[in-house]
Length: 517
Ligand code: BGC
Image 1 (cartoon, rainbow, N blue to C red):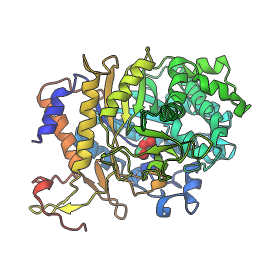
Image 2 (cartoon, protein in one colour):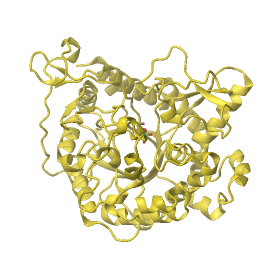
Image 3 (spheres, helix red, strand yellow):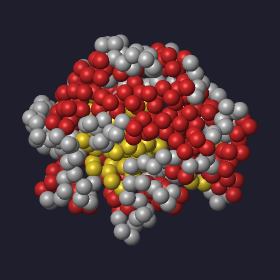
């Protein structure tokens, strides 16, 4: 038994949810099957040069065809909850109008299988795969898309509202606006810089309309939304660095959280209204956006170190994908700097678990009425190797760094939010690992694996990594200790499916690596 698994299990409060997360476009493949319509991401990824090595999302993990196998792996893992997203273009191919019954059927089967295996479904309505006709009509720059999301929410609520445990309306609007509309590194590839501001408001309005539609449909589950949060750290004590970090804080964090949790945009953004006449939020819009939530979803990956001026011109590797080259609209006004002496992920993201405590504490301080919080994503990409277990000949993936990342971050979150912790005011209810399996990491293609489960993108063979077995130990240790296992599925009584999971008989650490294959 892994000591860190035991220790972490002992820290888990009763009822704390441990989950895994994915998103439809990143795992499903089957883009042209069973009546799915194209999305803005299909079109963007098809353009040469948009995705690393022109990797294609066409098959990805092939989850659309292998869903029962994947649920079986989740069951073996012993996870409480699975966060997935509903593919809007699979369910409503035109983004408005007729519904595709085959699309609904896929998620019907997924949700039923999860519940039959005691795994509670958390469904995200919008994880970036805008139906192409809506994208072509302006996407999130067009206010109409918000109403279309409200309509889609009503469809999803009618179909699955009786069984989904938790709903996330939208995922990381900051990334959609920054990478998609301001800088052009994600779909739809627009580089509008500050003129992208309306896409913020329209996404948040879409959240509000979706929430309203689901409340009207009286869904059984709880409803929240998910923002990414990165504490902004001035590079030095220089006041200009502090100002620069403050600007980034507004641009990446407060712009998205304040309207939802305080009912207003940050002052500096309200003052910037003149940049675009269409960014003119009414009080009716703000009321929709700030309706009470059952929970708030927070994605945490890393802090961001910010300095004034252009820096040395070099952005830490991977930061461009994550944060954008420049958010100010005036190139060189400030820059993202590396943290000294800090281990990084394959993306170049700094590994700083202590800043998860800072993030939670800042949330508590800024938002006195913060609802219960789920960390809806956290995880790390590393270059994994597949090795063969000397004793059994089975494939194993010794990803001790990912395991450590997860152990350190989950422990930090638990310690920060318990009595006497830096963020004790936060009612933290759960942590979802990004990601259940390696997948299509947007413009980084298959180059940044985040999974607990390795996917061979030639054969689609799944191999659980050491981090998977570690999390399995955490969950088993928690259950042995007699804690409230937090199984939330409404109907856990049906027959479980079984997985053909090959467990290594000896620890990866003692097996000499041999090449994959
Ligand atoms: C997104 C995921 C993404 C992950 C890692 C989050 O921004 O919600 O879709 O794969 O971070 O980059």
